[in-house]
Amino acid sequence: MEKIQFQAESKRLLEMMINSIYSQKEVFLRELISNASDAIDKIYYKALTDENLTFNKEDYYIKVVPNKENRTLTIIDAGIGMTKEDLETNLGIIAKSGSLAFKKENELKDGHDIIGQFGVGFYAAFMVADVVTVISKALGSDQAYKWESEGADGYTIVPCEKEQVGTEIILKIKENHEEDTYDEYLDEYRLKAIIKKYSDFIRYPIKMDISGKRAKEGSDNELEDYTEEQIINSMVPIWRKNKNELTEEDYTSFYHEKHYGFDKPLKHIHISADGAIRYNAILYIPEKTPFDYYSKEYEKGLELYSNGVLIMNKCADLLPDYFGFVKGMVDSEDLSLNISREILQHDRQLKLIAKNINKKIKSDLQSLLKNEREKYETFYQSFGKQLKFGVYSDFGTHKEVLQDLLMFYSSKEKKLVTLDEYVSRMPEDQKYIYYASGESNERIAKLPQAELVAEKGYEILYFTDDIDEFAIKMLMTYKEKEFKSVSSADLGIEENENNQDADKEVNENKDLFDFMKEILAGKVKDVRVSKRLRTHPVCLSSDGEVTIEMEKILNSMPDNQNVKADKVLEINMNHEVFQSLQSAFESDKEKLTLYTNLLYNQALLIEGLPIQDPVEFTNDICKVMV
Image 1 (cartoon, rainbow, N blue to C red):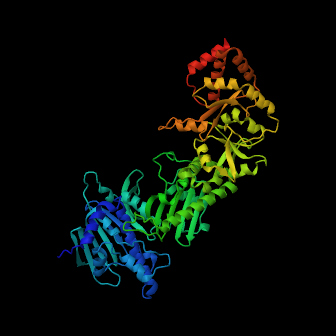
Image 2: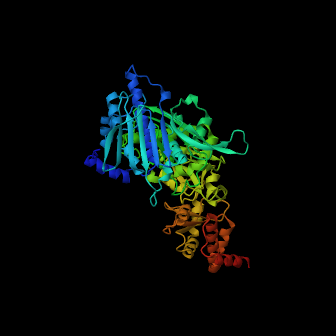
């Protein structure tokens, strides 16, 4: 029996493929099942044009048969089979696809797309098998043939006996070797799991004989072993069903079956697109944040199918980072795949799907915000931070997409509000969107810096997430309104009263402020009269782009560079404390130094900043009390 050599290019490709193309050995079963499905599809298409041929779907199946004793795994199909010429052409020349040729010849357009198009999937079998045997009898042929190969050395083809039309692929599974365990590909439950993972939505039944135990007839205590043939795959994917046929429970069940999350999703999005590119998708907005969501271990991405066959478990390119919380899947017959189904060409089709999905997610989130506010707020509590990261990332590239989805706690409404809602309520004389930053809403509400803005009746947005102020700095404006921190040196609020007397008083006390500034040299940029304080004696404000809250956040990071905001100590001239400062300046500079340090440390505490020397601070308090 003469051994036929693979072509030189095919031999090199086979060696490379066995060792490197597929990242997981288990995909060999996906490839062989997909080929079996193609073989049945070809009979279906033949029946469309051949009046002597009928296609009864119930007669067609794929069967997987493990045999631990002989270390063989057999994949049987009732498909169209192969002639000797087919075996030589399709299996003798790697990357020569019979399915692709069949598709071109028949111009398939009715939705039963042929899965395999590149002809290398079959050779994935050599990743787990020492010997691969193919026994096939073609439709309309009386003679069957056996193709056999041990790998890159070549193959043989000989006539053989086979009663039924179709193909059997017999894999002689490798022995376990060091870190590689091949026994799993003979275990019926492991095989079942692989089929469910990759081939659950193949349109023909995939059968296996499954063993188990049951109560022996006539006995309550005795068990007996039994084996029964089961259909492993579900065959009809939920995304190809009519939306009107599906209930909320169906979508929730699919969410849990696919292990997208343990929670109940807040919303599902079912897409059936039939335009420039055809695809189906089911997407979910989860209710709760996964435990590892804000960690490096979290992987975003959607399951990607090609005609019902799982190609990628996490296709990150289908989701932007800011919508990385979305779970679900996409199935398309139009995706271009190269020599391995798991290596996608990053082409126009994939980008177009991603673009459409991005628009759809935003649209549905806006709808949720408008029509189901409570649900949206639940979502925002879990994933609002991610939207803010999206505004900040990539130098603000995505801010136009996300700005209308942002929410912040309102000083007036005492609840989360959108930027649009804030701007719609702004009085005509209000120039800026005012915000205050802090660790909690309760602490922000007590900030002395907010007194003047609140007195004016202006609404203040509370920023409690670390990312908030950074995101807003990137956003810069919303509907032509600039953002302004209540701690900013210039609040932009014009005083209606005549300020001549106040300016005169400031000038008269210039020496006092200069002396205090000298005492706090290196700690503050300036000491000045406050125009914002009403009841509090002192506060800190900031000059420049870096605010005090931003300083705290940046310096809490592992690789901090000791960033400092330009702090200004503001003194309320209308407070009784100011009289004590004036008196001390005139008669007791040592006491003024004591008061200045106390006021500075008091301002630090209000801001939630650490006091440089707590012992000195407590001693200063004791000096005042004595």
